[in-house]
Length: 385
Image (tube, rainbow, N blue to C red):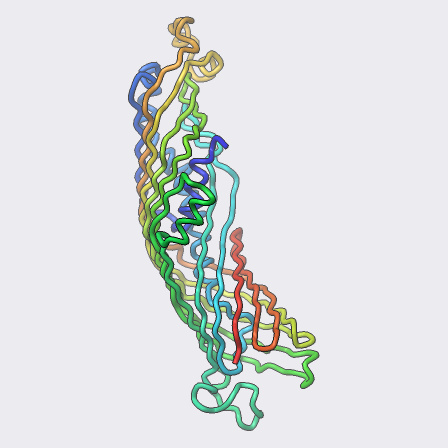
């Protein structure tokens, strides 16, 4: 529970891209800082590069992977077949959790800082077969009546979501009254699929090969997120010969845009009419940028600790510290301010697998995308006509 403040902040702000520029500043003031040796105070003032290299860069890279994969997995295409047209809605969730990070800089250490990335992308979906759209009938029409356009299916998706809406705020407050969340997410895009190998059916619904299709898309996602979190909890901290706690509110602000151009191949099999298993793989080119500001300022409580003194200071310096000073609690303020800018990673390779359940005109789809250590699942329902 001691790391809860930072953990929740980074989970909610998990949509960022790998960094190209990061600034960090840490300052310490008050009596708590005056008990620290001059060398330790100097280390605090120069802690920014260690925070960037050991923590911020790694967290932003983790966020980047989740954001891009959720943007790729946003069309709910399933096996890639459309008879006439389809409408529906789905929600994609992407995330990964890596090992906690310990930041160590000379005599300073910050233990078990979270390294988490997550992203959520709701979308409305519309799909249409171009042969049917141009008046050629459904795609399962007689072979001699099919046209070249029947091999093409167009998928459109889009959604705008505002975190400040009443229902959203009520849900957040019901879960945690210490979180103030604002901002919005806007997404949209299209994918055009071409049936390289046409589907084949036994004619009675027991078995169908969905063929092999190739899709090329353009997906866009913009995020503006403002988070303030304060649960009055404290985090353990070690500053050279002193140990103590650090509390305070965390403020997280970011804006980002991601544009992905995915290309993929899909195939699948339908059994007993109701169940369709599909799989595939592809790659995506990505463009975009992001900016962030993470700040935390709050009360610092420190006390000189005998074991910390022996491990962080030389024997000569440790001997100068009077025994009466050990264990005396001092208070002050510790402030951390991290700002950054980033560019999207160039490419992302991914695998696809999923299940679609057919019930009359309803299609329930679960579609998973895996890219290295990131897993994304999109769940949704479509009505097929």
